[in-house]
Length: 260
Length: 249
Ligand SMILES: Nc1ncnc2c1ncn2[C@@H]1O[C@H](COP(=O)(O)OP(=O)(O)O)[C@@H](O)[C@H]1O
Ligand SMILES: [Mg+2]
Image 1: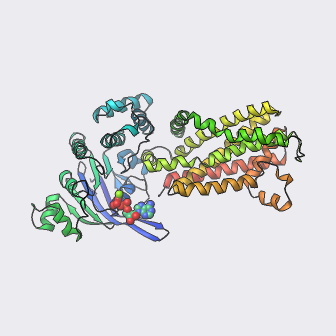
Image 2: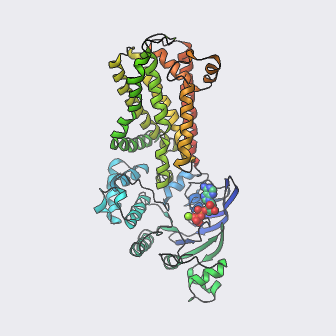
Image 3: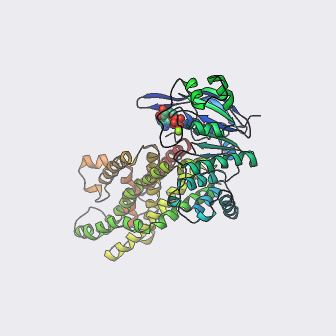
């Protein structure tokens, strides 16, 4: 059974300037233990899709289940099964790493002792032990990301949603994060659903790629299958493949590696 | 679960308040200035109500404290929204009602504490009122704080930025203060102003609290005040919880 399955999942926002169809009907199944790269340019509807799948935002159309729980019927079940790291992260800069980790454990209904123990475990796993008594504001970008992920792993979720986890990180921290994501899959069988607009990241990290544009899925497959199908060769660059899929060139390169 | 979650959220924000003790003491400064420099002006005036001028002024100041303080509670949540703390909490199984209650109960605790400081200061200035009346007054302060803070959080969750939120709240609180007779009783007002003020719920709270301060607990004003406070609280908590449940922004 797929761990995530959606049918016609859609979200329209009502704004002052009229309705905005952010997501226009996503049909998707994700297998357990897969690293799924959800790739698309800014405004494609990646964040909106993630916010629906994590119960933060009610869909305006379609349906979905996460770990067997229906998004609308059983949001509590979905919440127990998934962890989520927003692009902004989710810690208070004025609070210490330890306090945030312990509070998070208690939000997941651990007892005080369990929460303290879990905080130490997570800190050890994600190399945060030395930082436990620092304020979150005093962490580097990469440390902050590790903390965000530690928080999302508190309840050992089966699915982890990461929204642009490496945007703004230096190359070293990006590499660490990639290694962490692979380790989660390999050691814990965690399904990782991550969005990115970096082609190299999608290529290097994903078992499977889903390309979205303008609220719709425009391509779906392993990186090599997509290259073969859209650019004619498995040795093609993902950049050429992406161009063939969306009919658009990449945006001008910024300081970080090849971005769409 | 609701109790567990509420206590947890309350604890988080109470610790935050304790870290900024200075801000909390600063909050009492404005009403304290009124007490020191405005209170003495009233001592000889006929205010058209029972009791001394202090028994009229202090209930108004206490509610003013809560009105201005609690209405701006939402500011903090705008920052939390930007840092992603709100969504991170909403992804966990935590009760949505607790996300609101934990915060507003912290606010209620802060403003009741400030109210206690103010009443102690007023006792030195010459206030004399029955203990039961003073305690009833704290209940009104707590209920008004819970109501206004709930609405403030709801508005802030919807607002795009501080720049949208601040001016809106400022206008609303100023108008409410003037129209509810917080400074001077509306019994002094001309007919039209008295009529307008009857549409402002705080007016009933002030009138009831002034009755409590002169030891009258079974008056019509007290009944209306209690009803207004409970209705306002119920409405505000319902609205606030809804926003935490569905926050689309
Ligand atoms: N709360 C909102 N209100 C109105 N429009 C929104 C809201 N959130 C997102 N949108 C719009 O929906 C579209 C998709 O946004 P988003 O899902 O954030 O894209 P991505 O994460 O792929 O960059 C954009 O056009 C964005 O402006
Ligand atoms: Mg996004």
